[in-house]
Amino acid sequence: MRMYDIIEKKRDGHELSKAEINFFIKGYTEGEIPDYQVSALLMAIYFQDMTEEERANLTDSMVKSGDQIDLSPISGIKVDKHSTGGVGDTTTLVLAPLVASVGVPVAKMSGRGLGHTGGTVDKLEAVSGFHVEISNDEFIGLVNKNKVAVVGQSGNLTPADKKLYSLRDVTATVNSIPLIASSIMSKKIASGADAIVLDVKTGAGAFMKDLDDARDLANAMVSIGNRVGRNTMAIISDMSQPLGNAIGNALEVKEAIDTLKGKGPDDLTELSLTLGSQMVVLAKKASSIEEAREKLKENISNGKAFEQFKIFLKSQGGDAAIADNPELLPKASYKIELPAKVSGTIEEIIADDIGTAAMLLGAGRATKESEIDLAVGIVLHKKIGDLVEEGESLLTIHANQDSVEEVKEKLYASIAITKNDVKAPTLIYDTVT
Ligand code: URA
Ligand code: CA
Image (cartoon, rainbow, N blue to C red; front, side, top):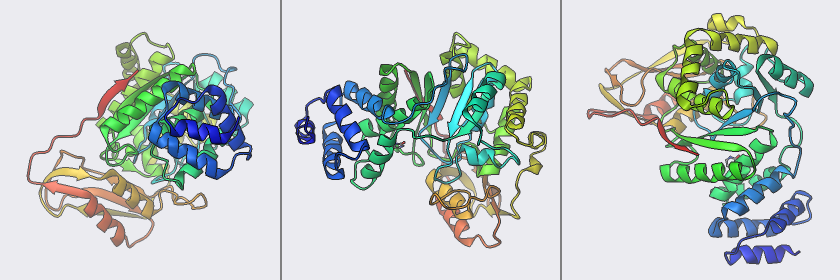
């Protein structure tokens, strides 16, 4: 087999065979095929697309390029959730204990990552003592005992994706549905879940700004998952404005606690129930979405979801007292309000820009080496569609620096207020199965 022929075949719009896809993934991972040939193939894929069969084969090949996590010692159907990313997305912190409380095993592998805030691991580390450096046996033991555990990413997962993603980044081929879908799904599948619920975000703060693109990506990922034997479904949800009110690590832990107690923001609560119901059904702990939703709501009102969160924190060394008293979480030195300059209705809260403001405060990492400040961030008091009076606070900035003029300017620029009526945006656009 020759890489030249594979490039030519895709350039001319033909379907690559499983053997050809395996050849190029294996050759590239092992350093035998050079970047320039893979770049040419990626560009051909960008223009010619891939069939559903090719996408599934590409994903499978990337999964097999490295280690795969074996979750089979955990009893029950392991369901994972993946979000394509947004601003202030606190759902994992809510969902893990919530679905565990109705008996769904949650074996979560999570990273730190770059972005506006830290990843799930960083957020959980805002809880004093909590750690994810546990052995594989300990991890599996904890999920079997308590139904929920989080472990830091380890091992050599999908090395093919790491190499391809870096190459795509410098060859203008990131934005391709077959390449994005196979990249995300390969990582999920290598992490060992039996079933996968995807939260595909759309809107100004999302990777897929446009609803039709989000729908295409959701369909592509669901098709891949099901073809490789993992029951997969997707929700398409709004990320035009940040989810919930809190953006920041400790602030989001507090928001998750409020939500588990039934006192969280409406949008975060609704999205958690929607995704959670799908997870419960895929895990076969309920026979319909309605039944699953009822179970989840019941465990929020009877306190079981909250109790589960405390068990989870304690089992990984965390100080569970923070759940009863979130005042014990890391706190910023300064709380600065942002008063509205005019009266009206909130028309726009550009999620991306709010995220950048949180990052300027130190809530996220710009590079792998950056230190995160777990205490800082932003708490919104208004969301799109809300009325506001001149002088009323739009949000509170939690900062560890006394001067936040640049952040304030950024925030003012990202919030639009109008005299017209504005409806709150749709939260859940679609379900893809
Ligand atoms: N996220 C990924 O993991 N891969 C992509 O290709 C795009 C976003
Ligand atoms: Ca939030």
